[in-house]
Amino acid sequence: MSRTARVAYAGAIHSARPHPQGLQLADGRVLAEDAVVWLPPFELGSVIALGLNYADHVKELSRELSLCQQGGAKAEPLVFLKGPGAVIGHRGQTRRPAGVAFMHYECELAVVIGRPGKDIAVGHALAHVAGYTVCNDYAVRDYLENWYRPNLRVKNRDGATVLGPWLVDAADVPDPQNLALRTFVNGRVTQQGHTADMVHRVDELIAYLSRFMRLSTGDVILTGTPEGVVNVAEGDEVVCEIDGIGRLLNTLVGDALFGR
Image (cartoon, rainbow, N blue to C red):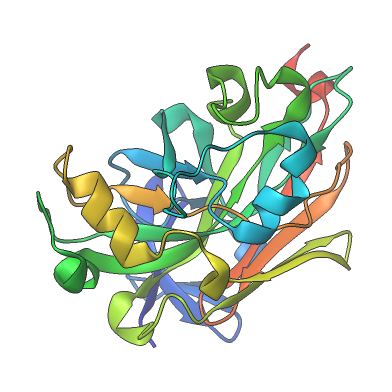
C-alpha cells in the first residue's frame, strides 16, 4: 500500500513513509512520530466541505433542522469552503474557546483530487482522485445560525480542521463507499459509521462540484460525518480512524496556550 506524509523536521519540509519505528524521511532518516511536526499530507488547494451527507446524522439533527425534499429526490449537497488557515496536521492541537457549551469533532473521509477536470461524468469521477486521507472537522454548535447553512465562524476556525496522517493512493482504495470509520475520545469509542451511508457518494460529489467549478490538483473534498458527535473538552485526546486509510490524532487545548 502506498502511503505518504509531509512533515517538518530540522528546519525543512520532508516527504515521509511509514516505518516500524515511526516514519522514514525521503533522505533515509528514521524518526519517531513525535519527533516531527506533521503537516497535511499533500499541498492544499481548495478545501471543499460537505454538511449533512450521512442519513443517520441528518436524523440525529432532525429536531434542529428542516430539509426540503421534493418528489423523493435528494436535496442538493450542502457545500461550503474553508481557507488554508483552518487546516492542521496529525498530532496537532486545536483550540477550544472558553465559555462555549458544545464543541464536537466530525470524522470524515477526505478525497484528494489528483487530475484536474470540469464537467466530469460520474462514471469517470474516481479516475480524478489522487488518494484519500482522514479528516477531523471540529464545529462549535454555539455559533451556528441555523443547521442547514453553517456560518463562517463555525466551519472556518483556525486550526479546527485536522488532516492526515497519510495520503493513501487511490489505487489502494478500490471502493471509497466500503470503509468503516470511528472516533475515540480519550480511548473510548464515541462514533461509528460507514461510508456506504453517504447521501451523496464520492463519485457523485466530484461530478456535482465539477459542473460549476474546475477541480484542481490538491483540492480536497471533506465528505461529511455520521451520527455520534459528542461534546469534547479541553485536554481531550480525539482519534479519528478510517479502515485502510489511517488513524488521526488531535488534542483539544484551552485559550491560555494562545495567549487569550
